[in-house]
Amino acid sequence: MRKNRYYDGPTSDHFNGRFFNIAPETRDKTFADIRQWRKTSQRARWPAHVPVQTTVPAQRVTGTRITLVGHATALIQTGGLNLLTDPVWSDRCSPVQFAGPKRVCAPGVRFDDLPPIDAVLLSHNHYDHLDAATIRRLVARHDPLIITPLGNDTLVRRAARRARIVTGDWWDSHTLPGATVTFVPAQHWSARGITDARMALWCGFHVRAGDHSVYFAGDTGYGDGSLFTTMRARLGSPDVALLPIGAYAPRWFMADQHTDPAEAVRIMQDLGATRAIGIHWGVFPLSDEGRDDPVRALAHALAETGIAPSRFRHDEPGGVVDIGV
Image (cartoon, rainbow, N blue to C red; front, side):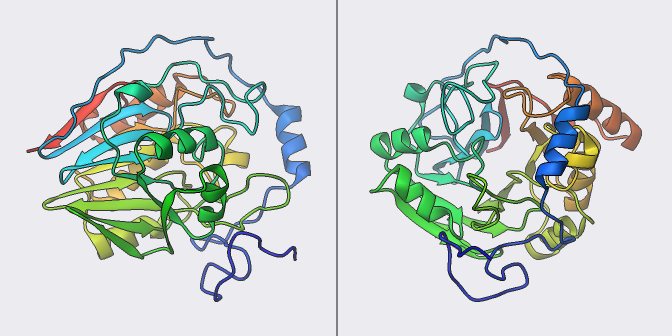
């Protein structure tokens, strides 16, 4: 096995030199799998551009407010803090900016309109979640604390040498003034290239500020569902869950690492979440489904389960959801 250049620590139930899934364990996709996907892919056509109504967030809020920037980037304002998830302001989620998936809609908050960012919740190292250019801009402008799972500090430090970073394993917690952030398991994987698969950990985040709690899933598959029932048992039901609903087709290839809308609804139920917000859709064309297919599939899943659509929203970038005061 190639030496892990991101993390060297004790073995655990999900680390043996590289990290792995546990609910259940999954196999790595091979080049043969990728070739088969490309050979059989029937990728839906996306629009080249979708207009966005941008939002200028308040500097601070009372209560909890979620502002959707786009894809997995959201501004969580809670406990008097401004937290940014998986920030991507680049035009492409790719190692280079002349090729790779290109955004079809602008960020719902202009970078210059961001309020002071206290912390970044960085779930894993895929290019549509860890964008080095955006990290550099954030560190230069806001100097946020970057909270990220084991091994990703190596990559963040390469992007921004003076970044302030806290790392953690699944179920570790970090206390901020006014909130507690817990690293929670996810069913996913990591890589920046072809030689570093699973060298850095992936996670979601549970944020508790006073009486309010927010779950940000990052990227995750549903697996056997045990991650979410365990999360509920250990941390309680969140007031709002930010759940991925896109990049799910074809299922034979994507199911291990990405939920479809029906599975996102199951996660909402497993968690007992009061409400949910769909993320990870409609910005970057990453898989075979069309841009609006996740919205239609979500409506169908909610109708089948009898959940009111108002409890599981699918706002465009720039959308704002207030949780309470």
